[in-house]
Image 1 (spheres, rainbow, N blue to C red):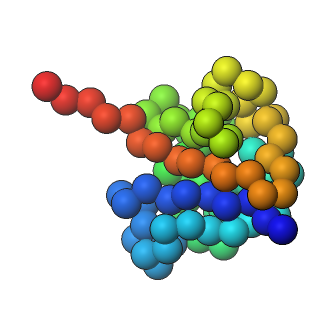
Image 2 (cartoon, rainbow, N blue to C red):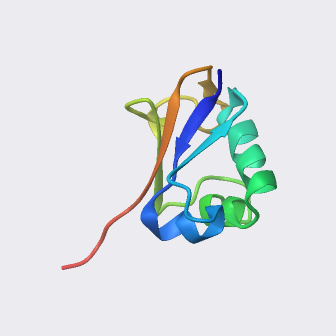
Length: 91
């Protein structure tokens, strides 16, 4: 099996239009690294210069926000869905 990463519409140009990307399980940091290797530019959109999650991007492992789990150390097992959700702001 694999980890399924849901790609938001605004980032799909980096994945060739793919809505979901299947990757090997591991820590969230490893999943993001694999996503970057398969689709260059994704890492820059998700991580800042310090290697931490950008403030305007929310990442969920199944239904849980990784900021309330173990952050980038959160384990992502086979069959789990990772959802990338850009923050929405405006008025």
